[in-house]
Structure formats: C-alpha cells, structure tokens
Amino acid sequence: MTPAIDTARPGGVLGRRLAMPPEIPVPVARAPLPPFDPDSIDHETGASLPVHTTLNGTIPPLEDPDYLRASLWSLTLEGLPAIPGGAGGAAQSRVLTYLFERYPPDWQQRILTAYGQAGYRQFWRSWPDERAASGRTIAQYVDDTKRVQDAGLVPAHFLRSKYYDDPNDVTNCDAVVDALLAIDGIPWAAHAWEASLWMSPAQYRAVIDHDATRAPGVRWCIHLQQAYADFGPDGSDHSVDFWEKNFAVGVRRLLYQYVTTTNGPNEPWSAGMLQARGNDVSVRCGPGGPWGLSQRFDWFAFEVVAQLQFNNQRDGDGNIADELHGDLKGYETLATPGPVPPKGYGNGARRPDGSHV
Image (cartoon, rainbow, N blue to C red; front, top):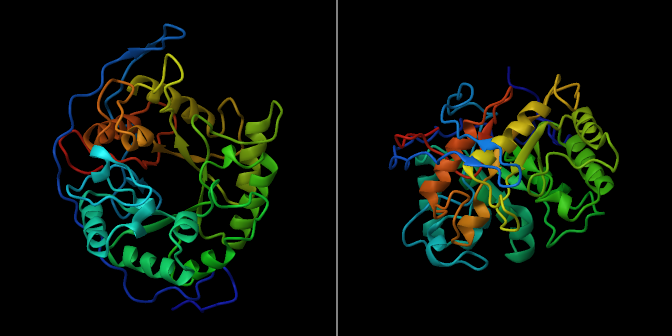
C-alpha cells in the first residue's frame, strides 16, 4: 500500500519522488593500487606501527544504504578545468565534489558518470559554499540534487561552514532541508564542516538537536577537526556526554578526520599511524569500550589525505598524495584492526586489483 503523503511533517513521506529510482551505476575496474605502505614507528614513543592489509569485516554490496563510499577530493579527470576556490597544479584534475556547481555543465555530467563508474555512491556537496560563495538558490541546489539522483548516486550534504554561518543560528538551514526532504534528496547530511573549530560544545549541541529532531529520517553525521572523535563539554566525561546526547536524538555517525598537518614528528600520519588512531576510535565507539557508551556509533574513514591532495604534498609515508595513493590509504584505513571496523570511506578507495570496494 502506498504510504500517505504528509507535506507538513519534515522528514515525512510526502514530497518524495514516486518514480522508480535510477539503477546503480556499474563500477569499472581501475588501475591496480601500488604496493602497500610499509610498517612505521611512532617517533614520539618508539612503538611499532604495523600496517594491516586485510579488510576488517565484510564489505556490503553497493546497494547497502548505510555503507559510505565517497571520494570528495580524489577522483581524477584529465583536463578538468580550473574553478574558483579550487586547487592548482596536478590537483586541478582531482574533482572536489563539494564545489560541484563551479564546474562547467558538460564537466558536471562527466563527473557524475565517472564517480559512479568508480564504485562510489554518496556524492557530498556543500550548501554553504553554494549559497554564500556561488550564489545558488535553494531551487537551483535542489535541481542539482535531482541530477545527482538521476545519475544513480546518493545525495549527501554539508549544511554549515565556519566561513559563512553564525554558530548561534540553529534554524538557518531549515528551508533547504525541507526542500530536499520534499524530493527525498537528503538521505545523508552533516550538520557542519569541522564544527569543533568554530562552535562551542553548547552551540553544536543546539544545532545537532534541532536538525535531528526536525528531520529524524536523515543519516546525520558528526564532522570535527583532525583527530577528534567527540566534542562534549569540558570535564572527564565529555566523550560520554557528547555521544549519549547524540544517541538520544538518533545521531550515531562520525566522519573521522585524520591528521594531515606537518607540525610534529608523526605528521602527517603514516599508514601505520592511521590504523593505530582508527583503532582508538574502534575500541571506544561502543559498549564495553573505555568510554562505556550505552550504544554504538558508526565511524567512517572520511578525511584521510584530502588536504595533502589539495596542496600537492606528500603523505605520511612519503608518497605524492595523488588519487592512486589516496585510494591506497583509503583501502588501508578499511583494514584498521579493532572490534568495530569503519563503516565506509570518504577520501576514495579501491581494492589492490583496482576493483571497487
């Protein structure tokens, strides 16, 4: 029986497109990965940092709606034109999905096609960049979201940014969220880019609770600064406070950002350090871990070498941070040992033989 349509209720069935969704693009095998990165050491403690090369857990099929397959910074298309705010040099050819609207229309379609063929599913965009920097209207943003859907991809959205938004304004994204809900165009969303860099814990809590309460059907995601897995109030139980309050409103996903800066002896993180720090999250994110949480949150190997790719730098193992080595790092993060494996990736990945993950 067709569910009733309710336009008054954010997150309700009403307004969803009733046509059959487009088929999922068929992935095309790409070039094989280079050799795995070597084991390394923690230069501060001398501890060994082995690189595990076997995927942790079972990778679900492409149609799994809860597994994240994304590449916001890595997909390489030769001849990709320069865009305002984009990267230069070799990085110009690497697609920035969150600046999608800045590419010429013919290239936009090529990007969507290539993205699906690489085996990626969620196509992440940035409403604050489109609204404030590019001058896109809600209607235009929704139209582009329909194009993402029509390409057989899954729309995903960052809603707020430190560059353009007031951390005290919790309602400023309501209109765009409602417009996206009307086309079933917001299955995934993050409340804000790097919230811990420009909001207080109290401000972020207000935003999380507001968004998740208004649109409970969205897969809401937490995105924080490098190496942060929580952003609770000061005190010994800040991690527990943060995640238990998230659980109370149905928020249970962390887009984890690894360290890519060059300020210390272990930076940027090597593959061994990526796995060690990911393991820290893995053992803490559910019941029985050091945080003693009542439930489990899912974590994703989201930003791995993004900044290094944008700036044409080398990664923590000395490789040029291009797409190939970014996908290698993506695969290696999925091999992170621990009781809870990452539930997907955001910086690109492929299997050693070049097939999709």
